[in-house]
Image (cartoon, rainbow, N blue to C red):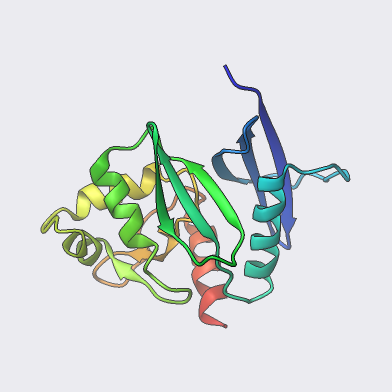
Length: 177
């Protein structure tokens, strides 16, 4: 069993905690519904990358990362530009179909949305909007893998792991910039 470090980040009204294994692999990101005061602590390199990403995101910039999906014993470059910071996400609990959905979702830009059905079609899974919804519910890396940008075909928000209020806030925040 690997040791895990948990870091708490506060960005205005949203608090985020991130869990990292001892080898700097990001295991998950969650919204904390209680604000925790953060003592100055030495963050791991991966936590520093994530903190900088969220600082830029919540200041209205559209930050970018090199994202590696670690899947079983493989590493898949999900998104990459040589000069950008790197984060590796532990994707070992997902199926290949779910990975395909998350890779496709990374193409949805800051301030844009896509319907569950359209995301399914873009992945080649026509008529699989429910599968997309279930895949979004499993996402352990909100904001980094922007499942908040997936909405219902009628324009309503649908559900969100962090709560519909946070989804609404994130979409509103992104549309303002």
